[in-house]
Length: 305
Length: 327
Image 1 (cartoon, rainbow over the protein chains, first blue to last red):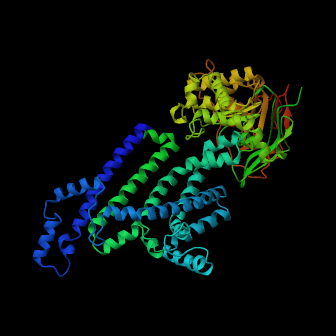
Image 2 (tube, chains in turn green, blue):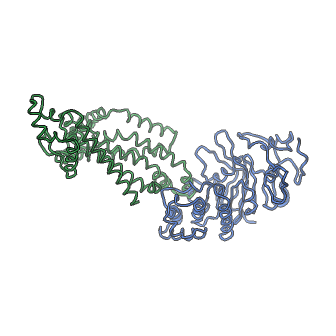
Image 3 (spheres, rainbow over the protein chains, first blue to last red):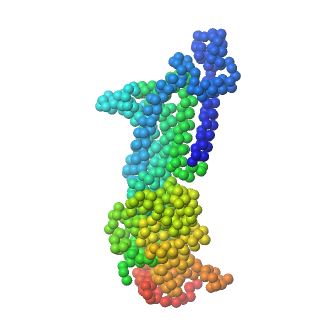
């Protein structure tokens, strides 16, 4: 297990390095940074001064190594627009995004695993079909629309939940539900198909021949084998929720990392964009690694892979 | 003679419009090894699963009588049936490679049967598991308990399955082709093991097989199944000495006997395949493949008694001699 974890870590580091190169190059390829920093009214001389001031006249390799060296120390430079340290900007907004993402994932898992198990146990009955129809609706529903509908019903008409801001835990419930809805269809279907496969297997027949309780057969013997694809996809979904929640954060006025990314892209605030892309990519890498390690714990055969 | 441990009369299993078992009857006495033989698709595995109530969803089971140790299994709700399974009746399967859960250790899978039915600590259950692994001939049982199924060979996994089946000292062990997936030397070891366990523990074994060599070696009693029916049932020696159903004779003719088979002579075979039988079928199901078929074979077939406990299902009289096959 330790060797597996070590090998997985090395792979993760290599991926991280690749991502760093890519995120660095992407911002440089999007145009002459000195010109966009200087603004529309700047003269050629102003641009040259800015180019030198920000070190943009140095060779790319030197700029890259310099950036990486600082990034490793937690220094992502300063935002052009916010006039604040990029690291502080991200640190300030990350808790909001993390809370939102974890809430969304928790809701998604709590809903989709029992739902998927139910559909599998009742395969090809009306229960199964109903679950699949629900999953399809979830897939088809735009999240901003669901968000607005919830705000109108739960927020304005019933007055149960606050509709915007980040003051209390209640503020995270509605956006969490909306975010969960984007993950529920895939997780439900994966749980269902994994459970159907597991329930048809010989070891489940053995478990039944041993006279084990229904709870033990479903929850212990079948679910553990069905969980592996669910864990992998849940990790990717969480990454998506952390990085891709721009729409939700905008709808609910949550100033998280997604919102920050959107603001800085529209303002061409490249140190922030670069840092956000890097941080989210690192989170993705960490999540997939965590999923692989969790799966290796679930299925011993993966440890030797 | 006391009542048999397992008494099956008129067992029927249907899947959709296919009748897999059509009124099969046989009994297993305490401490006896009873073999059910027949070719693929004759309903022998389905019969075994029907006894355990492990049939796939969609299967319909009925019987005139299905009694285990004095309990009517037909009247038993699934919850009570689950209490019997793994405790008083256990089962091992044809596929040792896939019958153990890949996600749990051998020890954990063995211990849970015991704690489920007998309670007690996991520690005590693991101690018992180690003892049984040693009993089924596994060296270093303590180490094996901590291993996962994928770390064991097929033969070892089948031994683990057998040891697991014995965790609660069952009265009946149903073994569904336990050696089919194993190579020949391992087959012999597993059979010897089953015979020893039967002798030492007084276990009754219902062994499903298509291999007459296995029957000759370990069975006290044999039932031959064909197309969902028991066509002949007899003590092993009587069956081999005096096979009475044309199908049984055909099966025995397929087995080469050293010293008896002449080099130039072709080994026997039964033409055709087992027919798919639909509910409501009448007459002898073997008649299309039988060299002795007559028009009366399409009508009701008499169940005849030979000497001792020898029964067979055919119009021909006991001790009939083979007439020349119609060319």
